[in-house]
Image (tube, rainbow, N blue to C red; front, side, top):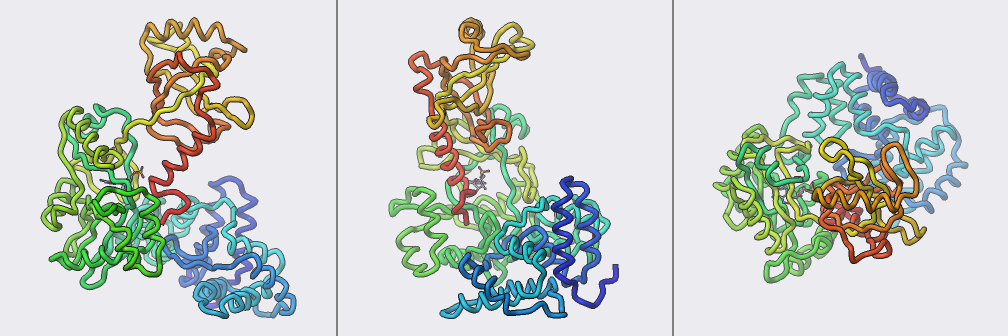
Amino acid sequence: MTPSSAETSFANLAQLARSLEATPKRLEKRAPIAAFLRSLRRDEVAPAVHLVVGRIFAEADERALNVGWATLRRALEGKRQTTLTAEPLTILEVSRAFAAIAATRGADSVRERRRLLESLLGRVTAEDRDILLRIVFGEMRIGVNEGVMLEGIGDAAGVGPEAVRSAHMFLGDLGRVAEIALTDGLPGLRGAGLRLLYPVKPMLAEMAEDLADVLEEHGGETAIEFKLDGARIQIHRDGDAVRIFSRRLSDVTGSLPELVAFARSLPVPRFVLEGEVVAVDHHGKPLPFQDLMRRFRRVHDIDAAAQEIPLRLFLFDLLALEGQSLIDAPYRERWSRLEALVPRDVLTPRKVARTTEAIKSFLRESLEAGHEGLMAKALDSTYTVGKRGKKWFKIKPADRLDLAIVATEWGSGRREGWLSNYWLAVRDEATGGFQMIGKTFKGLTDEEFEAMTARMKALVTSEERWGFHVRPEVVVEVAYNEIQRSPHYPSGFALRFARIVRIREDKGPEDADTYARLKELYAKQFERKGRGPQEV
Ligand code: AMP
């Protein structure tokens, strides 16, 4: 494991990339990655890790190369004048050149970027140039995602993947995780916890299907909070230094001067707060997500933007206070300390509920105030960094679509003898056909199953082992909680928790909702969740 003193050539990394691309099996990629990482000098580990996963900089690093096709084409032309020198290009040189390219500013920056690129491209073979270009354009695609790299790092350092993964949740930087793993091993990774001014991956929630289940899962009582339709933020303060991070851990401090001022106004100098910011109109009513994004994207005239689109802060968690991490403290305690720290008007509206009625009535209150729904949080739960689980549930009113039934399966158990599992589809205007987006056996009464079985039999177009394909004539109104991307159906989408609300006797297949509408709803949902293309 002694690193050699000479800098490692970029050709080694390009060679590794090609061999990983030729190795389709995830498991077989680990050993070559581990061997490669072990062969590097310590200062090469972080940059090499980023390059192998096809990134220029660390995940939360906002720098970008800003290299367009035109610049690249000219750099490729220009590189012919330079010759392959005896000195091979090293990984560190690539990393430094990328940093220099990202830092170019001003009138001459296009030419400067081209010059820097030329000097890189002129020093590699055609084969390695291909890898370099793929990195520049974010198109590495050698099947090494974050997960594979985390496993490779574990193998290289001789530690289990869990320790590496958990350190990554706190550090949010694969390169640094690799560096720590290879330098300090397991103790180093274990020491990676919450640090002031460095973001951690947020805890995530699961979609609730049923309110009674939520109560049961949380032991009979649960804390319900308004679910705000804004952007999640972490506010770190260490004395005079304040940094604010988005859900994807980018630094958004510059766009939010009023929150910086707020953080500085609190009586305690060291803390990490978590909450949601929402854009509001001058009456305090929430504005659509797009308006909030305008605030985040603004780089000039921040003060004018702050006047134009005021923000409201809703805090819901406290992850550290006075040098003490509260990650492992129960939610109940984090909340009571939060309550003691901040003014009431920045706290997310919240209640403790013991009945589904109480949850429903708070849900109505939240929707009436223009918010998205509720979050239900287990009172005794610790903050599980970066994980989605049942300790936090999101509760949103179901959305509905009118869908055609295109096939049906025989039921089993209590539903034996009935054609009672239905394939649901949207109408595809482009092809005139139907696109399946889910199945359900939920929502009908026994009498309805009985009648539906007879109806389905009359519409059969072909028989299968499991049931029948049918002519798409029956339309049902289907409630669902979320539209997800799914590889299972050619449509590419699947409904989560679909259940039939009623049979639409008044509608025919030509009235079913369309594929185009489904995609539109998906995009909207995406946007609202802050994961859309314009995400901060
Ligand atoms: P989702 O993105 O659909 O998984 O929903 C989780 C998101 O809801 C979080 O990432 C937050 O941005 C947002 N959110 C809104 N209100 C709350 C709340 N009271 N507690 C936690 N997250 C919330």
